[in-house]
Every structure is written in C-alpha cells, then in structure tokens.
Image 1 (cartoon, helix red, strand yellow):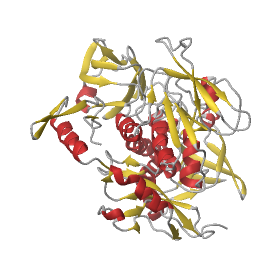
Image 2 (spheres, chains in turn orange, brown):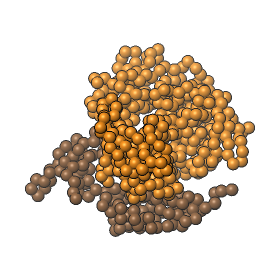
Image 3 (cartoon, rainbow over the protein chains, first blue to last red):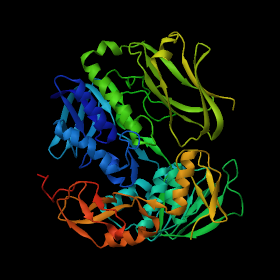
Image 4 (tube, chains in turn orange, cyan):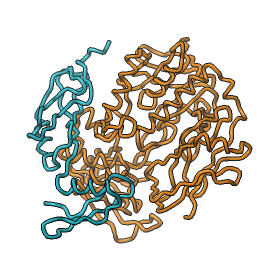
Length: 420
Length: 125
C-alpha cells in the first residue's frame, strides 16, 4: 500500500491550495492530490466568466485563470496528483480506496484533507411537478455543456432560482443566442451577488421575477413551457396568478449541497446547517487527522475565501502528520451561532492552537443596520455594525490575538445579531 | 439609449444612482459614497464590460478554449464581438494568455485565451 503524509481528495481550488500549503510545511513532501475529472482545477474550469481573484490576487481573473495559477505551482513543485481517479472509500484509519483505468488503489495517509466541493440541488429538491422531458438542466450542468463541451442546449430558456450560477448562466445563454425569458425566484430577494444581478440580468433586460415560483413543467419529449405563479409571504402560491411561459429549456439554480458521501463513510460528524463537517479552527473534523475545506465544508460565494481557508487546512493537516497528539479529544470550546446567524464555521476552537483565525458565517435573513456581536462568558468581545446583511453573502470576522487573550476557556463563544 | 438610473455594484448596499440634466451638466443623486459616484458617472457615459466566451479549437484535448478581452469593451459592442469570435477556429496547442484576436473591433482590447489547451491525445496513454 502506498503511503503519504497528506492526501487531498479533490483537485479544485480548495484541494490545490491545501495541497500546496501542506507541501510547503512538510520536510519529506509526500503529498498526493486525487481528482476524478480529467484536469485539475475543479469547477473553476467551467466558470469562464470574470470576477475571480479580486481579493486574493487583487486583479480580476476568470475561473480557468485562477485555477491555472495554482495548478502551475503544483506542477512546478512536482506535487503528485492522480486525475480521472475516483475515491470510493475513506476509513477512519485514513485508508483510501480509489479506482481508475489501471484498477483499484489503496493508499494510506497520515492526514487527509477533504476538498470534494459541492453538488447542485435538482428539480427534485424543490419538488417540481410536471413531466420529465429533455431540456431540464441544473445551471452548473448547463455551464459545463456550453463552456467545455460546446453544446447548444436550447433556444428559449427559463431559469429557476437567482443564485449566482443562475444569474451568470442567464448572461451566458444570452451571449450564446439563447433567449432567456425570465429568472424566477421564490424569495422576495435574490440570493445572488449584486454585481451579477446588474451585469447578467439588467445589462440584457432579462426580467427577475421575485416572489414567484415554478408551478409546473410542460412537455412530453422536450420541454414546451413552464407555468409560474406569484407567492405570498408564506411562499404559498397565490390563486389565479398562474402564467404560462413558452420555452424549450429550464435551468435550475436552486442551491448547492456539500458533497459529503465520503466524509460520512469516514465517520465525520456533519453540521445540519452547513451540510458539511463540524470543524475547529484548524479545520480538523471530528475524525482525528481528517480535515475539510472549501465547498465541502460550507458553500462559499467567493473562491478567494476558499483559497484562504484551504491554506489553513493544508497547514494544519501537515502539522497533524507530525504531531497528532496536539489534536486529541476534549480540547475544544464551542462556537455557537445564535439569533440571526444561520451558521458559523469553524464551530469549535482547539485550545492547543489559540492563534488568530477567521470566523465565517451567514445570516438567516435580510437585515439592515444590524450589529454582529461575539461574546464569551456573558461578555461582548467584538461588536461590528453592518449596514446591510444578506443571506447570499458570506461574512467574516477576524478573531485576533488580543481577543483570544480575553477568552474564558470554560465557556462557549457565541455569535449573534443584536438590535434586530 | 442612455439610462437615467443605474444600480451600484461596488458593495452589497446596491444604491440606485440617478442622473438628472441640470442645464448643460448633470446632477447625480442616490449614491452612498464617493467611489459609487465615480463608478456611476463612468457607467452612465460609457458602460464597459469584460467579455468572456469560448472559441473553437482544432485538434485540441478539448474542443473549445475559454477566452476574454484583456480590457473592458463598450457594452454595445459585445454581440458584434461575439459573432466575430463564433467564426474563429484556433489550432492546438493554445497557451494561456495568447492573443486570439488583436484589437477586436478597434476597441483597443485583445481577446486572449484563459486556459492552456494541449494537443489531442498528447497527455493520454
């Protein structure tokens, strides 16, 4: 059985950054990346639009360009990687079973970084009635078909959900000569970034129908149209607001779910709210020596944040391979998301690594002029005013050394919104 | 047609910025900050965008190479630029950053490849 210090599952932005950072931290450099697709870079390869790297590189790159900068470093440093290789099992003992053209492979790792990303919710996830004709895609699937395979996927489309991928695909379809009839969003607000609403919809006069839901898909062999309707504040359909839109293509952009089938096999405890593993500030999961980062941990809106998070995970994975004793049990205090906060990552603080770290969180609703507080043992340690908070944008707060020095380690850390 | 209002994209606040004629000059209202005002002025006068799309590749490990303009180009030229790029086929290998079309539509912007595409079967066993 082959042995490695650190094995990274997934060759997307999280996996690449984690592997590079592990590699830098290790003396014997035994790092391996396992990727199931033909190329490294993950989903960035199909995200050909601009807007990546503004924070990390201070310049605007496309997805493939952003990925290239990391792939180049992986190649230059001769970090080992396997493509077209599918991991089918991870055990709590950190044995990995993978399969590729050459057959089955068993690999033993001192530590593992989970970086498998996320998958898209489908029409089934939002329980869409109607037939099952050709012409129904998730937005990311359509993105791959158009941007990498070069297919023309339809002529007239309706997009369901106004997340960033849906908005970006509205523009992409338009540029490809496909008429986008409408973007239908059940919530009274879009969960996509503002710049995408402006540059992908407004630029091309594509209507965004807020507080509308898809009621039915029509068509036997190919999509022939959809019925939509207005919804009330309880998201219930308002009678007699139904409207038929003729189209041959429907794209679903209705959310992403961390891809945690392998994490479950490894016995990693998952957080019900993020859908990803519960981790501490070293990005260690509940299974010792198994770390997680990127969209498999929680769904990010900016890849730049994935990179930063993955670097930390990679660094600690390397530390684990040399000093596993620092990650023993019962060394944590909890970080709790309370009023107004949907989730926070990390969910724990490891007392052996009381070093500055970043709390990333999402709020559960749209808030104006709210105050985010971080408290411990009944004392408020951080208070930050925010003029706007939306569920669509991930927020972050740095926990500095100064704050850490004030912590009472027998109590939880609590993050909440005040004055709401 | 010139717009009379734009939505600022610089921060999540998303201010609606309006433009009103005031004699020979314009007056702007609704901006939340100085940066927003500067952005809106540019957006009213000459809205520009980076254009990204794909171009056919002959004999490549993949059949399409993603491309972008290296500078933002005027918004009204986007569809014209797309139709030029639709008619092009490049030969693999393509290096990332290599120029696919120089100075497209006299905008001063070059269209460059955003990915390396090797020759077909070169990396396969």
